[in-house]
Length: 171
Image (tube, rainbow, N blue to C red; front, side, top):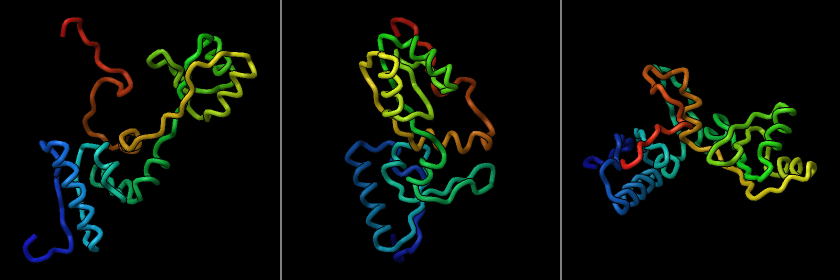
């Protein structure tokens, strides 16, 4: 901070910090930006960046992939999904499949893409299905980042991000 710099760069500034330290550094970086300084932050912690960054620059394989607000990045790069839990889940799944609506079973729910809560609730009512749970799962920065950069990844894990690794009993 000596010399009163107009541009500051932070690389993984919250790694190893406790919650109070994370809040402090987040507030510190925001206060620097509010003074008119440019604050660049590099981090692999997407949930932290969602809370901290107003604007994102995403680079993949040396190319600029995005230069946009965090909100717009999430809206442009991923979609909200709706989760529904019903005792007639299999029947509801057949109706959705018949209409060409993409879904998957996750944690005892149907996770439905490209259909809002109201439309899904209306469809269930139309078929007289009982609904125990219906909620929109908003898109995340992590999901948007993974979607945008999937073609720019040089190395990737061999499993889907939606399928956690099996855990052995007793571990």
